[in-house]
Image 1 (tube, rainbow, N blue to C red):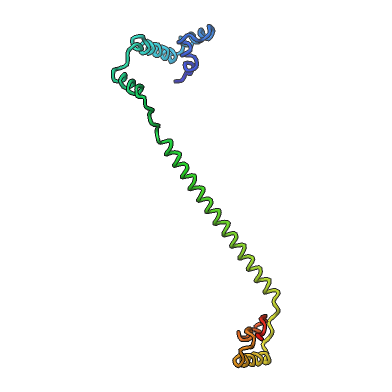
Image 2 (cartoon, helix red, strand yellow):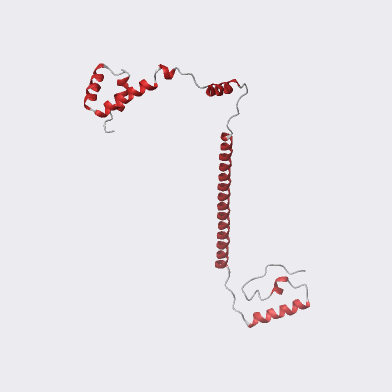
Length: 182
């Protein structure tokens, strides 16, 4: 429909709700606009056909009356639709599942960050030990003979300290810290 004046003023004109000036303007418009004139004629025809005393005064059918009486005469309260409850349960379950999934993911990320921090600390401590450790002493014949003597003594005496029995610790730059057993 090209003319939209019917949508704005047509029903108000047909029920005499426009003021005098607006009514005269719309009447003049209807004389020139065939679309609005056709809409007005169709509306008046349907109004006379459908909204008459004969149509509106008809009683409902017997089946309709029986259904109205059946519903209204039942004293018990009708059960409500359970779809609202099931919808609430579904939404709660979905919300709980999403919460638990998020909680698990955040917990995992925090755990991984903690492990990463610990690894960085261990690596940092190892680098500090490497930088602060005394340089290894070169292997000399005297050190080798001392070690061989110590090994021979440990085979003979159980009272020699345990660190000397573990191998060539002095040669590799490690110094035993345990005490000699008395």
